[in-house]
Length: 362
Image 1 (tube, rainbow, N blue to C red):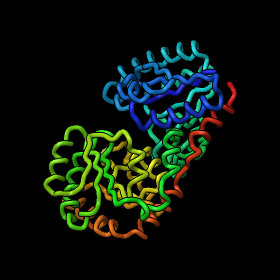
Image 2: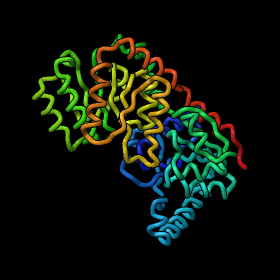
Image 3: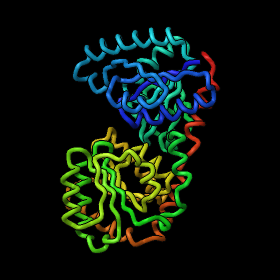
């Protein structure tokens, strides 16, 4: 029994797909899961340690339709034909679209051959590919608020964002409330780091140097700025572990008292399970400003504060006001932690896998 998981190109699309593939493999140990991606290096990196195969399939992104319409149509016709051959060869029980333009050819090829299709959406504002495809195929969403962005007749299941079982095991042992954890401030600017987050956080910790003297700061700075950020903390004589990237990020979530981070769906899913209070700085160039909408869900539940990135002075002043209060407000952090946990959906991957396995060929 073969399942095709179509999409990728970004960690945000791949991570939930891997979680669902693991659950499908547990529910049916004779099944096979094959990823069909955009051929990017991140796909090989993330899937390299899994038992799942990955097949590249080139497709033209929707953003190229206006700029290069002929190339867009020709490229995607070729992709759909290649996808159709793959579907005919593998004869999958179902196809799971993970979002993004790379998912479209396989989803369309599957539909033409009567193969059931499911869509996964991670963000509060669904991506353009999923908004279009959900006219015809059922979709599993992470946020209840996503329903308003989808077609009126869309078949929507609010499952939460799937996480791998290995991550769930880490969060299962997380101390219940932040006040029982060590004084650790975690700073995450996204997988590649963020120059603006680095700049703004360094400015506020400098202003609060004496108040943060007994805090440990763990800062993911990205490759390009890591050395400069590390040197800045050394000059401030603050305890800081600065790295370009952390492989043990889930353990850091579980051990920290407060996080300053972007508002990507996977990050939010993980910190919700960890019950980690957050100050969110949504990535300002995300498609359709979906990180702002992601953050709003958590702010409304009292789990986080949101700072919209504007000019450096305004952003830093807002961060300074928040951090100067939050770092010493154990009761407030514990209340935020409870709000975080109320948004957690640890059964998301299993729920999606069961829905997919229950479908029959059309």
